[in-house]
Structure formats: structure tokens, C-alpha cells
Length: 268
Image (tube, rainbow, N blue to C red):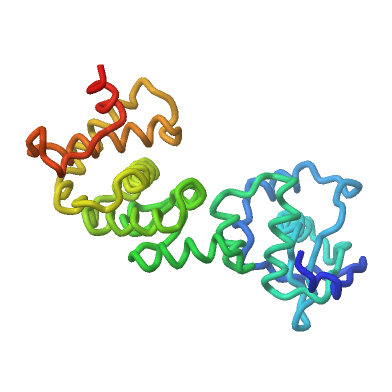
């Protein structure tokens, strides 16, 4: 927590469950997990919920599933650690830190809570994504402009930097708009690798309308290899991009892109 945490106080109270409200930054409550708690309920293992009293209301930070289970079991009150002095942003930050040692938060959970808490990385990624016409969301119906590979956005920003992430999304939107697989994790990582090596060059002009064959060649190449999230796979995707970029260019063209393997072969 930041320096404002010095003004934060906490105490234990019995709070009416009807007065406890959910927080928007939390992951969705799992009905299966609630049912499991109800089925195996042991009051001795209940522990305490963690809530924040703000604006005259109790906002739950930790224990949403237990709170729902208690309601199902007709409980009216629950023991709570009541925090006072937290802002909404600090509640989101507290939630992230408290849950890191429990069931791991998904990248989507971290992203949502990070935006709420004003986390610099999440806020910067969100601005870049939106500036290029995309938005972040979880799985569901296929939508080119909805990026569900949230972990990949973190990976690109950490491995290559924000500028590469920005250029990657710009190129994909400009070259393959509407092709759902073009905004998949594999494509994002492969184009990011390309941008980090060669920049923007004539990507849009030379690779327009080639995505279908690029994707096919990539999936065939990766069929007997490891996870698509590995360094090898992103380089494989990038290598295929380079191959199609160079098609139609004479061997000594200054526009041709050199791949490290090609350079090594020329030395022998």
C-alpha cells in the first residue's frame, strides 16, 4: 500500500450480510465454488471476511464466495475485518495483494483490478489498446476487436516495451481488420517479434490478404512443437511473416528482410 495506508484503521465486527456490497474489480463469483463451500460447510473454518467501510457502505474485498455461501445457509451476519480510510483504488490494490497468496488471480482479474487501482502498466496498456480500436475482454463469441489474450498484452509490454505493443496493434488493425485469429495470442506475439526486429517497414502493404496462408503455415509448423506461448513459437510466426514479406522481391532487393538463420547460412 502507499503512504496513505498510515491512515487506514481496522477492527473486527459482526456485519449484516445484507449491508455488504460486492466490488466491481473482483472476479465473478463462481456458483460451483459457492456450492462447494455450502456442501462442506464448517463454521470453524469460516474465518473472517474483509470489508472496507466507505461512503457509509461496506464493500467486500475478500470473502465474496463465503459471503454468498452464508446467505445460502440463511446466516444473517458474519465476522468481518472492517477497514476504514481506504479509497476505491486502494481497495482494488489491497484485493490484488491479499489474493496473490491464495487462488491465483487470472490475468483478466489482475487487469481489471489494476485499472481500478490505477496501476501504471494496466492503465498504459488500456490506453494503447483503445487507441488502436481494440478493447480487452474475456472469452466468448469471436470478435476481432476484443482481445482476450490479456496475459499476452502484459508479456509484450514487458518483453518489448509499450512502443512495440502500440505498433503491433496498429499493424494488425491496419492489415487484417476483421480476421478474428489475427488478434489471437500467437498473432500478437509473432507480430511483436517482427516489429522488434524490423520496425513497421512495409508490413501493411506486403502482408495484406496473406493472413490465412500465414496462419495455416504457422499451425502446421507448430503441430509437433510445444506451447504457442513459447519463445520458439513467436519466432516461428515471425519467420513465416518474413518469408511472405520477401515473396516477390528479387534476391538482392534492399527491401528484403534478413532472418538470422539466413545470415548464418550465407556465412558458410
